[in-house]
Structures are given as structure tokens and as C-alpha cells.
Length: 454
Image (cartoon, rainbow, N blue to C red; front, side):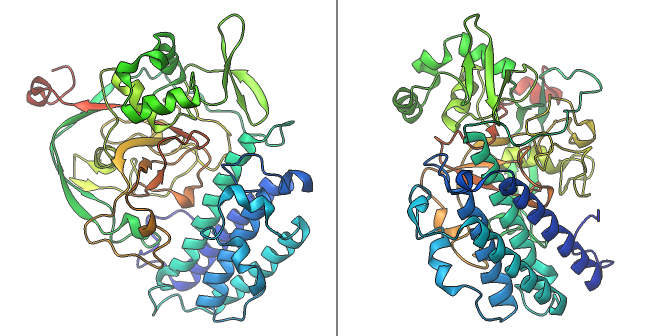
């Protein structure tokens, strides 16, 4: 069901219920695919200290669904109250979860199936209005997004897993015409950042507020593998000039030489391991699996910087013709396969320019999908922020060394991304599907001319 907003007055309660069922079904089918593709030994194994065993993720998805939909919205009795603590992300670090007395894969599948049946019964009986948690099916949308977010986390675990490939994607689309890396001027002025009207938007995306920015220039495409390889060839990893103090310290300690999963053969050709397959690095594809420090170092080497979060959102949402902020770069309609590379259908970023239907009014490509994009901004609440429905989703993470990422990746589900969606992570993280694009301050000549190069 493709529509502009869940809050449209033309959407009645039964249509909303149907949409929730559709989204719950899609998220569960994806969870099943990511876990059914492996044997029990792989499901209970910890493939990286950065990640949970896959069987923990699956049961955690069911536990959160039960807590919010079955117990809170539905007022039903707990299904397995004795396991609540096992699947509480705040009680156990990812590295320790493998040592917990977790449910077996078979018991986990039975548990999440039982919870889903109860959740669907609650949905059928809920009026979907009259209480903030259920208004416009918010709690159900929150659970859909939560499961899809864990599906992307499980996909990252698959990438870290060693062994024969078990996941397979569709062939990548090719650009109708080659798109060369370029820049575009974003004029100075005020735009509306965040949202107060998107029904399934999470608390950190709220409220909508006006932000004034000076003119800036932003890349029309994410930085590609080919561009990043030039940085490596120029000695970028060995040149202290391009790195922040923290970045240089981490680069030395971690021994960074290239994006994660890259390796070079005897002839100097770069290859990358992708979900168990070794393949040549494609020069026209956005670089992925780089941390914030690597992204910032490349930007400095290129004579630029990373965009702020506000700059990224203005480039993605602001329509100069109307002065309005759209839901997505292409408009208000939900994503289709022609708009963006989402939902892990290709299992890799697509070549730059592969989605002309998703271009923003300013001519910026692939702001949604392909790779999460690092920004220079720290993780902080918007003015007027209110924690809802619980502080552990956003509030407890504000501050620290987190950096904001925007736009989603090829592993992000359409239901879990929009122009206002905010992600955050530590600046050293590389296992996530993250890349970046660059920005810079506009020169006085460019501001006078109203275009880059003026």
C-alpha cells in the first residue's frame, strides 16, 4: 500500500490495520530468512564480539513485541516472563550474550510465533485511537521498525560471519547514463528540520523546528570506491595532516589501511569480501564499511568536510520551488524500488546514478539507501524534545562521542527510513553499512552566482 502519510484523512481504521499486518508480515519474513538460512550452530555462535548471536536478536525482537503490543497495548498476561531479563539489551552487553542461557533456535521460533499471533489478535481488537501509544497504530509501527532495525543488524552479522555464502541478492541496476561526481550549491536560508506530523516518526525526530543555515556546497553523490582508492594511493592513511587527534590515535591502534573487508592482491588490485564472496572493488559504487574517522580524514584530504546533520537534511528534504520540506528527496510518496536501494534486495550499494527517480530537487543522488552517511554532528536532542514512549530509545544515548548517520543503507527497510530519520553510532564503528559524502562552505563568488563554480 503506497501512500503519502499514515495520517491522511482518507485512511480509515481498517486500511490502517491492513497496512500494519502487511508491515509486520514483511519484517517477520525477513527475520526468518536471515535466521533460517543458517544451521543451529551458526545461530548460537558469536560471529564477532561487536554483535549478538543471531538467536538472541530473534528472541529479542519477540520480547519487545510482547512487551509493547501484547502486554502494554493489549493488557494480556506475559507469555514467558522468566526470559525478560535475558533479552533486555541494557542488562547484557553484546559480547556477553553468548554466555547467557538463551532459548534454543527451535524454542525461539516457537516463542516469536506465539507472540505474533497474540499481537495480531491485539491489533484486530484495538481501536487505534484514543491513546497516544496506539494513535495511528504508533506502537505497531514502532515494533515494525524495531524488527527491521534488528534485521539490518543481523545482516551486518552475516557480513562478519566466515563461511560459505548463504544470502543472495538481485542484480544491481545500471545508471541510464553515467553520473560523474559533482557538487551543488544549497542556498542560505531557513528550512524545517524534523517532524511533528509523521505518525511513525520516533521521538528523536521530533519536533519540527526551523533551522537557518548559511549557503553550503554538497556532493551530488556519495564518495565512491574509486575516489576512496585515490585517497589510499595518495598515502592518506599514513599522513597525519588529514586526521583528527582521536582519529589518528585510533587509526594507529587499529592498524587501518583500507575500508573493512578490503584486501589487495599481488598486482595491486583491490578486492572485498561481501557476504562470503570475494569480488573486485567496483570503482563507481559508494564506499562502505568506513568509520567516521576515515570519512573525516578523506574529506580533509579532498579539501572538504563532512556535512552537518542539518545540512544533510536540508539537501535531502528542502524544495527550493516551494520552500517546503518533503518526506523524501523525491517527494512525499513512500519509497519504491525505483527510488532507492533498500531492503537488502541487492546486498550491496548500487553504482552512483542508479536511481534517477530518487534525486532531490537540487540534483543530489542516493540520499536514501545504499549507505548510511556519516555527518559531523554529535547525537543531541532537538529543541523541545520529549522522550516517548520510553527514555531508553533515544534519551539515554544523547551526548558522548556518538556521531549522527543519515539516509539508510541497502540493508535498511523502507518502513524504517525517511528524510527525518536519525541514526547514531560510535565514530570507530566499521561493521555497519556506512559511507559518506562531502560538503564545504560556499565561496562568496558561488553565493553571488547562485551556483557552484560561479
